[in-house]
Image (cartoon, rainbow, N blue to C red; front, side, top):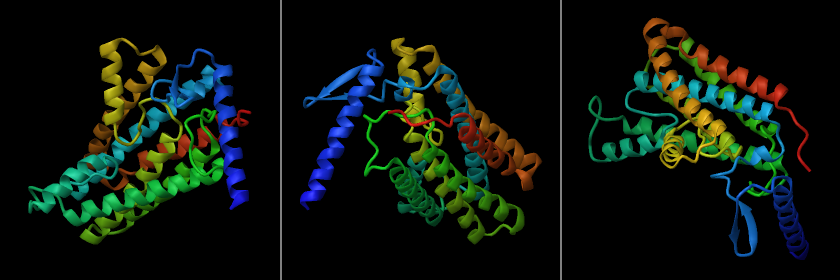
Length: 288
């Protein structure tokens, strides 16, 4: 127990030193006080900007838009094919869960069993992503005061696991006849993948960005426009993610109508391309 306490104290000192390194590398980063410790507020500051080149950040932002596009396609496919259920937008599923509890059933309401499956699978994916990210980060938790790479390898690994689940979705979609059990399997696979992606992208600490549910992104976009606080890069990034997700939903609907059997091929290919580009182009040595 004494050794564990010494190790914990050492980690805290190391994290404090890294937070001071952030301030030294980029003196213009806004810093807020929290009981004497200095913490960078990642809601306003892109932490990767402290040590990643502008070129790498541009590539990262384009990959985020691509992920939002693929999420829009998958969400459209699932919502239109399996009834009133989301695989990424879990706020909507919580509302559907309440409707189901009130007795509203298909076609007017959701299938409560399918909604619960999505919620549970998403949670499992998010939990697995947290374990992957924590294990490969070499610490017990993800700290906002760490110095982040533009796209750490652990993020690509988590997205790679999500890609495996979505390839499974594609195989089941193309090879099995539609039925309620098959639909439940497909919802579970994609919700699991979306949970992985949500936590993987969250660990990048890019202000206001989510590539699976755009509520926080939309709020950040509206707030920045209202207060005139957006920098050009942030405005492009937020707008790109919002437009990308809406465009993905449009494309997903079109694919269901015109190429139903092959509809999931495009979003799977986009995610695979994102993982490949990130693994090669954004590979960096960790900041010291």
